[in-house]
Amino acid sequence: MEITTYSMPCPECGDLEPEELGYVGYNIALLKCKKCGNTYRSDYSK
Image (cartoon, rainbow, N blue to C red; front, side, top):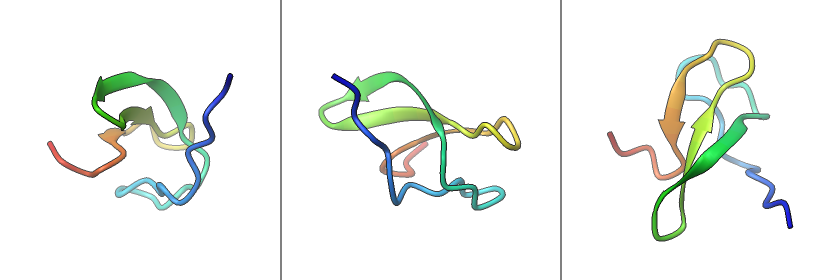
């Protein structure tokens, strides 16, 4: 089952289709921008 990560734009470049790397906490996905390579969390915490 794939979870779509919509409305989680990259804070660096604003791209809307990040790659999902996994989960770092309850309902917090680790995302990587396919466009600029920036890695960020779906809740935007560090």
